[in-house]
Length: 322
Image 1 (cartoon, rainbow, N blue to C red):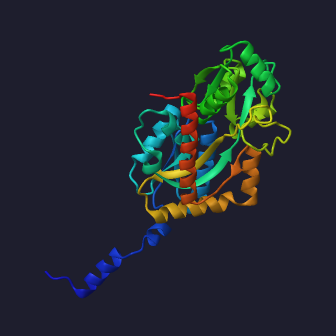
Image 2: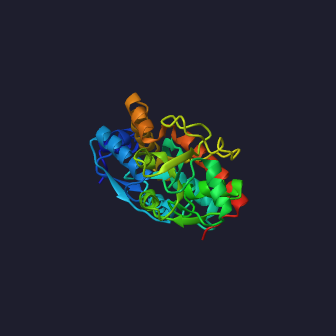
């Protein structure tokens, strides 16, 4: 039976319906939001902030799904392989900038398999020590480390994670020898540092400021090139004598590659609008993060630059992981 002309017109209009209409309706059901580290650390904190912003703006649920392990790569791999329909989002972290530089083989490609949405914030890391360690600055720490090679232990959020690479860069640039103790996230790593199981670590400020302020850990330097605004008297590692040292962590939001561009733009607009409010900037700074809130293309270029940077560090330090 032949279709009525009006039916052809209706079908044609439906086929030509712009993706913007889909994006305006999005989301029509709960969205899975993968956080590739355990609760309590900076990725969890930033991930919950993102789900709260998106949930309030859309009136829909964005459900945190913690998938820790392999330095953030288990959760990122799940995100990369999820349906690209907008109903799986995830945190993209500094781990995705480091992993291609250090792992011999990966199950996904952060650049090709993940769509960048926005870099939420950069997170300077604090070089922290247990209060029992008699080091008040970088010079004193190096004196201790060099007097007793491999006597000091340092924690990280996993092999190939940003804290691991920062300390490896520190070791390479200073000649210090210390033993690496990897954890599945910052929260358990910090707990063992507080208890004295490990002596030091590079910890993102957003995850460790309360412990420093309470005196449970001592911050002796900040990893970034510039001083950290909430702690203006704290020296940078470079000011402590390690010339050229500059690094830190970061947190962003992404999705599986192929997610419709209009959905990417909608999520970006919601997050960037909220992140750029004075109240949110102040809150982030208080928690130890510096707002970025950029475009998907800018975040993509940033990710590629991070991979190139850590590839140079990994090559110089001969760091390769299975």
